Structures are given as C-alpha cells and as structure tokens.
Amino acid sequence: TMEFTDRVSRVEPSATLAISALATELEAEGADIVDLSVGEPDFPTPENIVAAGKDAMDAGHTGYTTSAGILELREAIADKLADDGLEHDSDEIIVTPGAKQALYEVVQALVEDGDEVVLLDPAWVSYEAMVKMAGGDLTRVDLSKTDFQLEPALDELAAAVSDETELLVVNSPSNPTGAVYSDAALEGVRDLAVEHDLTVISDEIYKEITYGVEPTSLGTLEGMADRTVTVNGFSKAYSMTGWRLGYFAGPEELIDQAGKLHSHSVSSAVNFVQHAGLEALETEAAVTEMVTAFEERRDLVVDLLAEHDVDVAVPEGAFYMMLPVAEDDQAWCEGAIEDAHVATVPGSAFGTPGYARISYAASEERLEEGIERLAEEGYL
Ligand code: PLP
Image 1 (cartoon, protein in one colour):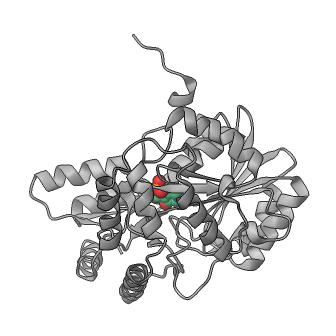
Image 2 (tube, helix red, strand yellow):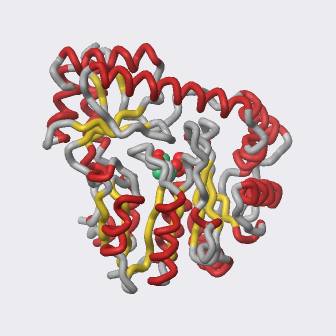
C-alpha cells in the first residue's frame, strides 16, 4: 500500500465537487439543471485571440520557451501593469499556466510549517488548500458582518495580524462576493503591512471586470511596492479559462526563489498560448462587451431577488454574488439542486456558512429561470 504525505492528507477535494456530482447525476436522469455554480465566463474566447493562438502554432511556436515566459509577453504585461500604476521590469514577472499556478508558486516560496497566513472570508477556496499544503496556519477574518466590505472590518483585521504573520491574501474584486475594496480599506491594509512587515498577495484576476468602479492595485500604495505580489491572469477578463495563462509580478528576490519552483515544475506556460496572450492584452472591445453583459445580468439578478424580498450585498465586480440562505448552507444547496434543479456553491466552501454563491455568468433567460424555480420551490 502507498503511504501519503501529510501535505496531501491535510486538504479535501474541492467542495464544489459534491454539487457538480449531483448535477451530473440529475442531468443523466434527464433533468434540466440551471447551473449557477460555475466560475467561468459563458462567452467564447474572442476570435482574434483564438486566431493568434492558431497562427502561433502554424508559425512553429511549439517548443519550450524561457521558463519565465517569452520576453514580448512579459514586456506587454509590464506595460499593462504600468497602466495600473505598478512598476515592474520584465524580469520581475513570471508567466504561469493560470493564475492558480502563480498563487501556488508564491505560497510555496513564502510559507512553510507553522507560518501564519491571514485570509479575508469568504475567500476563494484554493487559498486555504494552498496554505495547508505548504504547512501554514490560517487566521481568518470574517467580512460577512460588513456586507463583505473590508473598510468597516479593519479593526478585526488589525486584531488578526501580528509580527508573526507571514502573509496576507487580498482578492479585490472578490470571488465569491464581488466586493471591490475601497482605497481607504487598502490604505488600512498598507498600514498594517508596514507595521508588521507583512508580504501581501494581491489577487487581481477580476480587476478588469467591474461596474462603475476602478479598483486600485494594492502595490501602487506607498510602502507596498517591495512587499506586494500582484497576481493576474487571462481566464476571466478574456474568457480563456481552458488556455491556462496567468502571471505574477513582485520583488526580484521573490521572483528568483519562486522561479526555481516554476522551472522545476511546469518549465513554462504553453508557448503558443503565450502568443495568444499577447493578442489578448490588445483586446478591448470584446472585453467591454462581456463586462457590459455581466453588469446587466447583475442588475437583473439583484432586481429579481428584491422582488422576492431577498437583499444581497450588490457586487461591484467579478460575476458572483452571495445569497443569504439557511444556516446549513450545504443542505440548502443540495436541496436547491434536487428540488429546483438549480446548482449553486455553499458559502461554507469559502469559509462563510449561511450563504450560497451564485455565478451570474449565465444567460438572462437561464438566470430568470433559475430564480423563478428557487422561489417556486421555497428556497427564497
Ligand atoms: N484567483 C481567483 C480569485 C479565482 O477565482 C480564480 C479562478 O477561479 C483564480 C485565481 C485562478 O484562475 P486561473 O488559474 O484560471 O487563472
């Protein structure tokens, strides 16, 4: 028999799996499932990006690249970051197969047994798993009492961090809440980071998907440049989830250390995918179109829920919102899929029981159908 490491036994498979398994089972029995559990845009990758990927393959961009990624792409990313006010040379950027791999490498480079990591709950599911696999201990700050906003919870955050804290993870716009943190909130983070000499990961993967607000990049704040790792990727803004392309930018010493993990694990991101990424960074109209559609859907869902007297914290970014449900959110989600055939993700998967995450990356027709069914079956 095989003996497995503590590292893998400390984590559970993704909590969304139980819901997708139920959905698949019901679909096999012929049920029409309204799937509001998915974490990806429902649009195809824009045509110009697909064409650039094909052209790159035809042009023979099919071999290994430098481990950190092709220079043209790292330079284009550096320009994009500069537009956001972040100064990074191309050698302070590593291109990864998805932002998830970027986060994994950064956590592996910074966290070891007994290190303390602070998360803002509800938090994206993989942060916890990554920290546990690295041997770190989690301290979690609950933002559910403040409509998922950080600014009114800065005192709680201050109480959670200390000189022992190694790392803080900030994700704005947030998955699963859609919250965009105010400049005052980020300044509060900065003050604590400087006071306690913390490293902060700023996961900005939803930065391009916002509704009437311009999120500030944490690394632009005074005192943050040499302690912030900015993570972003192509999955969400350009609807490229399956291409697997992301990156992180940070101080050179971190890039050197994480770069070893990168080169000894994935080698590099896929060559022709990196070329498609170059084209993606030039793409504007298609992104605006998707963001406009998400905003209309957000408004639709918020209005429909209000008609059923359900108030939600209105998201300002990403394509998720947290629906307040029964205390046992796992049972609520299982019931919702069995009775109403609507798939959502339990809030407890993100550290916040009593909620379900709805993704509104679905057509207006399906969103209307889903909410109507939830109401009819007594789930609203
Ligand atoms: N960070 C957050 C907050 C996410 O929601 C996701 C995807 O769901 C990722 C990172 C990883 O995205 P990818 O690996 O597809 O770039």
